[in-house]
Image (cartoon, rainbow, N blue to C red; front, side, top):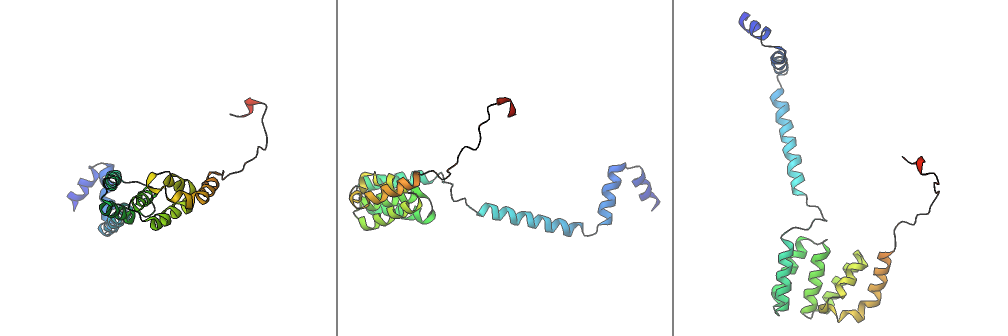
Length: 174
């Protein structure tokens, strides 16, 4: 016992504090175990969540592959690719735009119209961009006026601010 006291006396203040803290808290391992499991749970949850606005790097090559297949006349492959992309990213405008283009190129205009209307509900400018594509040219007559109205409404400013005061003295503002 005397040897242990001597070691603590001459070990220095940092060594004494750490030894005392660990010695006084017998549940140190339990607390740290809970802390580590909580940290791992939060990290796993954070990695599992995908932001909706993020566009993955692997998406562009898949959409280009679908466009090449559609241009080559292989509409089945193009639709398979864009349907899988749209299923993975249902809230990504590029995925729905590619789906509408592939459906239009395949001659499935009723389904393409539904997709363009969905884009118009999100933002009229998306639908307007979709109708500019040559694969969706037959839909321009059907949806042109409605899409133009939606796009115009989307371009309206959200804030309608008015000037309250104008400071003539520039030195008043830091």
